Length: 146
Image 1 (cartoon, rainbow, N blue to C red):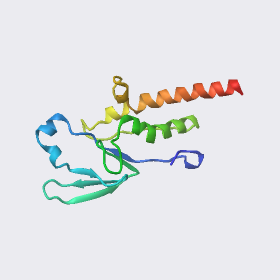
Image 2: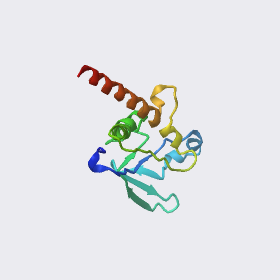
Image 3: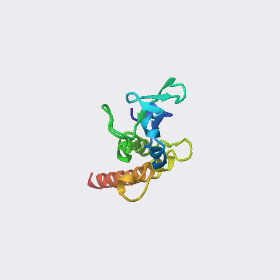
Image 4: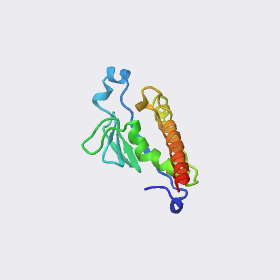
């Protein structure tokens, strides 16, 4: 849903899985991942020793690879699904925050800041900031024309 005056204080909890890095691939970890997505809001964690599974639900889970039900979670997809909602809340006068949590090397900085080059690797912060200023310009232009 979108944030509006009726949803002040709204919190959304999302999880994004990152792809395996070179070391993990060399070690063969990619052959038996301990997490997998089950639908758009469920994450399944498998204990590698016992094969016991634990299922967890979130507002949204994002995978690094395409699945039958969802495309891979690119930076643009995260902007479309999360960043635009945050930007709209800010323009409506609400506070907005993204909190990235996880171990070292899990992709927090990549999601938040990304890389400046190539442009498709930019993170949420530069994308949201750019969208806010673009909307402000558009609103100014609409006001001048009115």
